[in-house]
Length: 180
Image (spheres, rainbow, N blue to C red):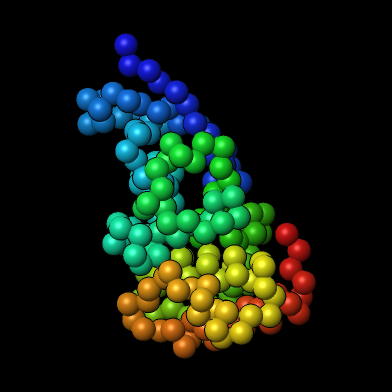
């Protein structure tokens, strides 16, 4: 008999329960709420929850496109197994906007207003990394921003505009004292 446990994840404020299926033969036609011990968090977010903002690019933890926030800490979801996230609170790029109004988070807004993206592929990871930075440092220097975003690669080379966007977000957040 194949053992089936469950795990629970809170993603963007919504609780999700998954069956951990150890029966690899059923992986060809799995139930929607099944995850396997080898499933990465990015696969679960994109494939099971339909959250396509989290990107899968290098699949080796080198580019930061799959960055999400787990329990207030940045993680690479391509390097994190879903089963290791039991009980975790996860925030993806879709979870930054205000849940009731849909109003963009100040970092998202600043990236839009200051051309912080070109192709947009790196934007979710960059924005989440910038948000975590600004939650702990309301007045970062350019060097602070470079260090905080060092795990994220922009293939377009838009780093000057990304830095400008983070500085603008810091000013916006510091000036209005964003309430959670």
